[in-house]
Image (cartoon, rainbow, N blue to C red; front, top):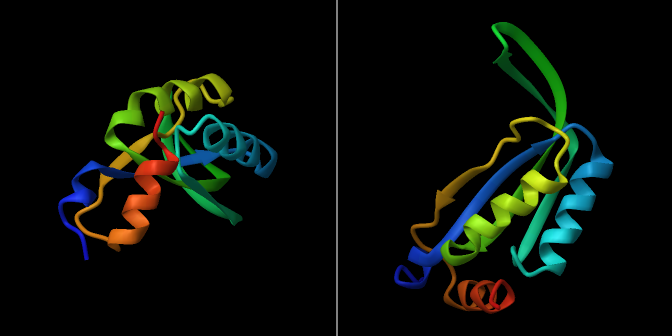
Length: 112
């Protein structure tokens, strides 16, 4: 288990209004090597939130992106460019530990 390599790793959560958009964003960011891997949760999640002072709910598809701290700002810009929402969810969570071989692969796959 590697703790040192994990310090550079981030998990990013993004929700999308459609499976088509989720897949388009996933393909684009992996192709551009902004993320090493993106999981598209095909079963919709139900989101509740306040928008412009009103309680809203929506069925969305969740993206779980694995990237590096170095690629985070470019990843965010690309998600915003491809996303249909005015304010898309973009939450980055640090990784505290993980498999040494997986973290090595991830850092190589998201490198430029």
